[in-house]
Length: 224
Image (cartoon, rainbow, N blue to C red; front, side, top):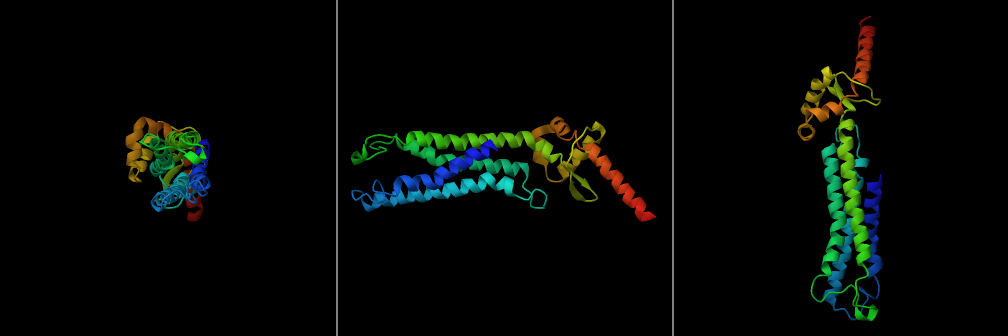
């Protein structure tokens, strides 16, 4: 949750920061600025808003997606989405900091207190929110993905979600791992290896056995 909060704070800065700072006599309505300078300022404001919207979408996409339907977002795609959120949420601030190193630039015009660059603290703060928030969520997904995968098993040709967890005998590991691979999770198996998959699936079997007993009872009742 902390990572999402930081990324959302970053989005707020992107969506409203440039508009609040520039839509006044210092930039957009500055009579001393030539039209071409105002054109680039408008371009910067628009870019900031677009990056804010994109970052907001990428940040919350993994959590607003249907977790049980056929279009369920895989852990790999969720992490990729959050990596992109960290990227889109930080590049504007990084570019602003880098602009200070170009010759003849300043964060303030002379009539407004320049030369100076007081914005650097805001740029560093919002940029840190984007990078740290994205890193936190990517790490959280990497840690939580195997147990989340373990909440799904296949029975009768369909996916079934498993809620509660227990302990499992290792003799059922390989069939479950094979199912993971068969369901298009090859990259997950490659990245975590069999040992990690073993840890990821050590808590599924009791509920699988319960489901099997329920199925047997239903078949027995149907046969009668």
